[in-house]
Length: 321
Ligand SMILES: Nc1ncnc2c1ncn2[C@@H]1O[C@H](COP(=O)(O)OP(=O)(O)OP(=O)(O)O)[C@@H](O)[C@H]1O
Ligand SMILES: [Mg+2]
Image (cartoon, rainbow, N blue to C red; front, side):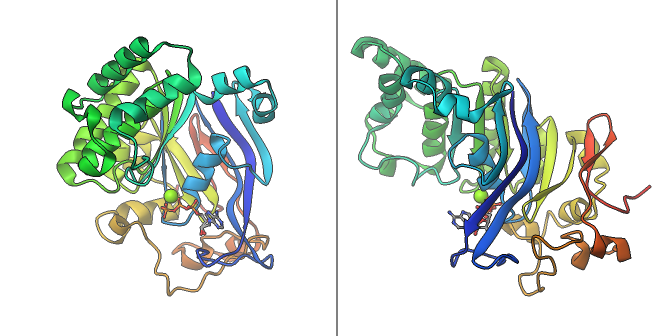
């Protein structure tokens, strides 16, 4: 349904950059990534902080443009929608949504819950005020919020309630696909499981597909059909969820899972003091410098993501047998 083919995103370097690229003054945040999410599918995108997950999610929704490569919706190029008439554009836009990591900063602090949830209906539908009111009531109910919260401002809500409002807003106009960018990051454990269950329930009831970006590997395992692992801008492995968690194949995936209870919990796997050995544009595997299995070929040629099993892809010169 939504796919990217060989997309690359190069940002001008700024102080947020973790690793200056080989090209002077730029960061290759996404490096020739191909990934698709099918109708009714949930794909978890995992990888350490700064590896390009949010950037890829935004590219998949056309929120930011790719520097290179294609973004396709049902096989049609993104440009067909962005250059179409306003009605066609708005119709496409409402069906592809994003839930952002920080539920507070993504809500307008001056709008009540009801005003926030009414906005998409006003923008995308010709409904009259009474019908919008009913739709907002339905949404509040669908995401398990108390009806009394409708007059609250975001600052008066708990983190979990705010994330429910964000999810409700994304759900408003019958989306087909939602990029959930670390929707659990700011929540405590019990609220996390409530939000995961809410997302699963919405998926089952409305058939919405997700790209579920998360540092929370147990949640990714619970929710996703397929897992995609990103490392410094590149996809290194994609596989069906259970297969992946039982038998991760890329050395980076193996370390990621082994360390998931330790450093990865904070969203960072590599030690920032370890020098970055790979320079985008250079040859060789980006992970070679930290890979326990690296051989000469890993430093001289970049491995391609190739199919290893019916639904599994791996970018490694020396995969385990
Ligand atoms: N607008 C921007 N301008 C310049 N560099 C950017 C911009 N957005 C992201 N980057 C850089 O691109 C790289 C990937 O960032 P991105 O936010 O996509 O990572 P992420 O995997 O989502 O990280 P996290 O897990 O911390 O959210 C980082 O080096 C980041 O500093
Ligand atoms: Mg991010």
